[in-house]
Length: 443
Image 1 (cartoon, rainbow, N blue to C red):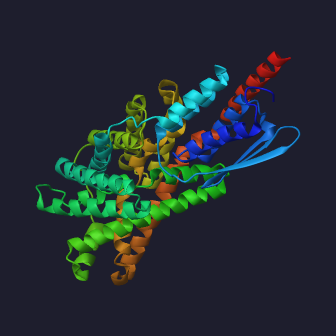
Image 2 (cartoon, rainbow, N blue to C red):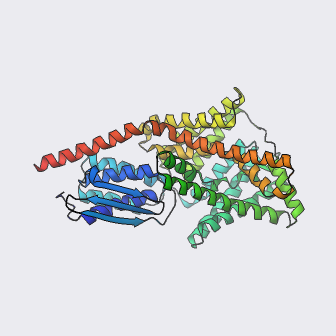
Image 3 (cartoon, rainbow, N blue to C red):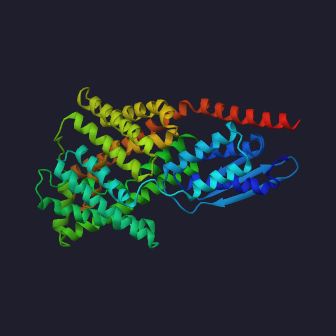
């Protein structure tokens, strides 16, 4: 292992830095391991001498140099989402092998990625949730005026969330406050000129929906990373609880702390019948808009926005066609739509030069059954006054929502799982080719 990395500890620190960047920005466990393996190969550490254990908040690295075994670990304190960083690290891990970067060049590019600013301005960061929630409002059957109200309320909630996080307030408390603020603002939409007065209440907080933990948790679990997968799913539950608290408090305030009015409003929202205001083309366009909104929120590369919008439109169009024309259930429609969009990313990867995960997660969030989730939520807030029939309807809504979310995650992961062996062989082939060339040149 005599190369420019004189110290094995230096190699391990750099590998852990790459793993930490990926873990703190929303990468799946499989991607963290694969990218770290390529970096290890660049440092002339054979795969059999390298083992990385990814835990929810810590990385453990074990490397053998032929004489001794070395251990190192790195904590991962931040849990955000930055798809641009994931894409750049993935590209860098390929380039260092194919273009045979020098150590100095690797350090330079990696430092540039760490120090890189967000692609989008702060104003766009505020507006992106509005774009996404406006699209959701149309998907829920709202009219254009309701979509505008939902977009404004979501932007207000996001503004508050960013400001609270800058003050160092707990992320879950911040999330509840953002949901509270957006819902309070959306409540007053029923005083404004719109035919769908309650739809903004259902759509305004969906920018907080934990789409990345949901899909990452399912992918990690299916890939055999059970601890990471279960922790991601638990984070999803905590985020959902934070949203629930914020929304419930907002509705309580809006009804003047009157328990009867609060229960009546919750039942009205849980029993809301949503009918499409527009044709299938408008629905598909709304799905594309929502997907692009989440892409901006996740700091996606600009070159990917159009492709993600098209993937989101494909997923929702497929689901709606299967449900409306062929009378499939929403569960089956969501699974097929997610699988088809996920399969299409294999082609899009070549155009955008971005990893599959970066492309598919924001594209599939418009499939999330927000109406069923909210129906279950509002019914649970009044569970003490529900009749037995209403209770079982509530339970069915919750179970349907869980099934649909799980099937969306399965659809997102399935094509990748089927092609995993191909990816692993390509990854291993590139590493072996690089190491053979290095050791051959030394001889």
